[in-house]
Length: 62
Image (cartoon, rainbow, N blue to C red; front, side, top):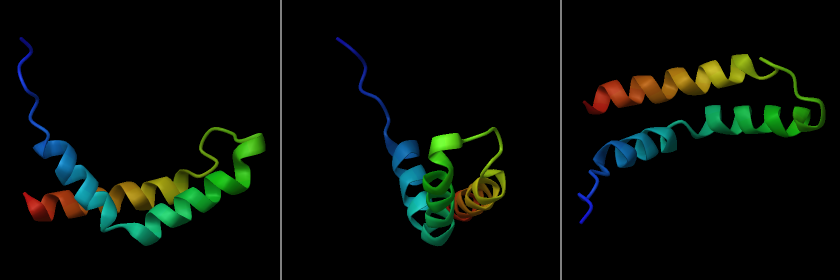
């Protein structure tokens, strides 16, 4: 029988991402605007802002 997985880290990540709505929205809008001709790092600035927010939020919860 498989060992049950601990989902606490995933729940923490989900909660942290939920606290970064404006950054997630900006990243999503960038991806949507560029999806037909996306290039590497096209939305790097928006992703970096979202990533910083999530990481900062995760540190506060720890």
